[in-house]
Amino acid sequence: MNLNNDDFITIGNKKSSKVSILWFHGYGSNNWSFEPTMKLINMRLNEVAYIILPNAPIIDGKSSWYPLPTRNNNGNLVEDYDGLSKSIEAIDDLIESLSLDQNKKFIVGGFSQGAALSLSLLFKSRHEIDGCAALSGYMPSADKFKEFSLKSDNIFIAHGYEDKAINYDDFKKTLAFLETKTDELTKHTGDFGHTITHEVSEGFIQWLQKI
Image 1 (cartoon, rainbow, N blue to C red):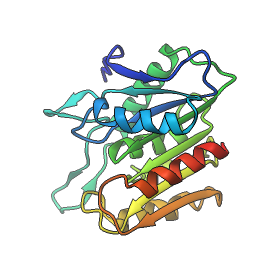
Image 2 (image 1 turned 180 degrees about the vertical axis):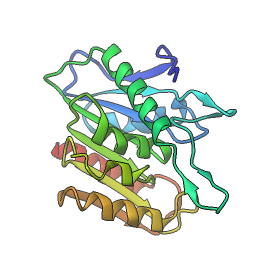
Image 3 (image 1 turned 120 degrees about the horizontal axis):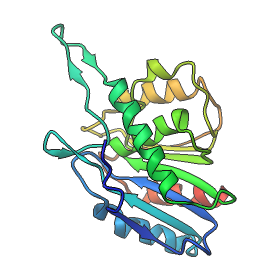
Image 4 (image 1 turned 180 degrees about the horizontal axis):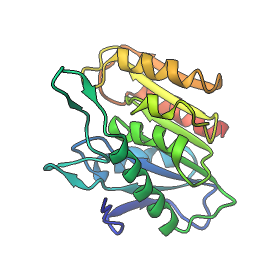
């Protein structure tokens, strides 16, 4: 997978920062969609973060971090674990190319499909990860990750009851899976849809401050 490694936005000062955050946008979107939000979050954190927002490659005409699930002849959902694994390898290569300070905290996170990717990195990345924020996402190919261990128990996960893109039942399945791995989850739910509310942002900031 070609990530177009030069096609990313950075927020904050790499040298003086105390934490590095790699943030993934949702399916069909782009990194600019999160630039204002992440700038605001870094302001609230007193500019201690260095935030990298990469752009997903184009797959079947849409920006996508990994191949979407398909349905087989029986109508059952089939996830592309091999495609996801290749995407994780490409992200790991990107992380390596960023030459981040190994002595600083490193957080991955994202929204929707970006949240799903960040959760998979928390299990399969070859890099050390100190925390993961998954907003309105899900755990992709969960059955393939049963034997994997988490790289960090620091997880912030948020989802709306009214989410129509990734429904709340998918969130509950994701939560049940993650709870088999850790009891240190920070959860935020509420009456909202496929979006990031002010309350979710506040919860995310408070979680980051603790880390």
